[in-house]
Amino acid sequence: MMTRNKILLAVVVFGAMVLGFKLADQRAQGPAGDVRVQPSQAVVDDPELRPLFSLPGVDGETHAISEWDGKVLVINFWATWCAPCRKEIPEFVALQNAYGEAGVQFIGVAVDTLENVIAYAEEFGINYPLLVGDEAAITAGFAYGNKIGGLPYTAIVDRDGHIVLRHQGVLSHDQAVAVLEALL
Image (spheres, rainbow, N blue to C red):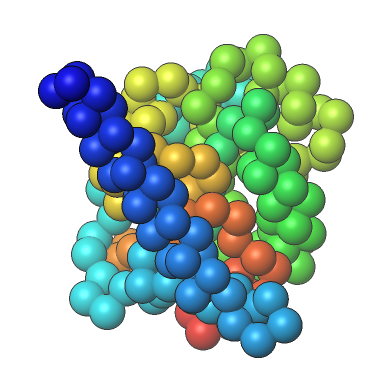
């Protein structure tokens, strides 16, 4: 009897959690399905200096994030097996083309294998540096504020090296442009 009550309690708690997530998701939806920017996706009020990290690139060299000091950085943590990641990459390629000469540098940090990333980059024409790692890439993501380890995750860093945006999930074209325009 006691075990049955525990199971029933677990089912009720799980159901309440699922309902809570659904309600939170509905509150995130604005009129006509527009997604509002949540606090975790908003521009950081008190920007902190971006953490340093180094990872191997698809070019076979190890790169430190400091190589791109002085530029506006869009650091995207992603994987080839992540469907939402694959959705936003074409936008990032287009934005790198549009804003690269103005001092914006997209950096892809793949939680994946080097072989998968090279094949994906060639197939889809990724035009920005790609760094690759497993645990080291996840650790870098945590350092940039990705507390749940979900992908995709994007951090935008200003020219002075301060993180000004942390975004869990797909970063839309309009969201990216709004932040980039404010920093240029």
